[in-house]
Length: 79
Image 1 (cartoon, rainbow, N blue to C red):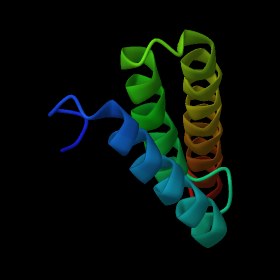
Image 2: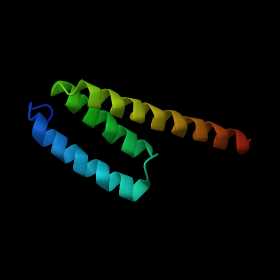
Image 3: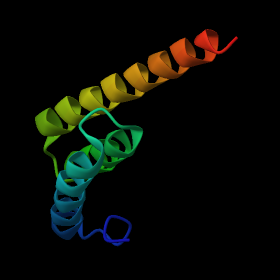
Image 4: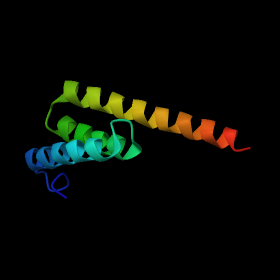
């Protein structure tokens, strides 16, 4: 909601807190973590923090790719 209201600093703080909690709960390579990384990256892009945004978008992509790979492997193993 903060993001859509243009409250990017508040959005950044909320997403950083959520990211810490998600990483504790699920580990760094979980799709829920990747979604949070993506949201944080979008917030940073709006704030002009393009270098930080790029790093987190790449990390989110890596997590999503790994998750898809592991899901594909698991699907093939059950056939």
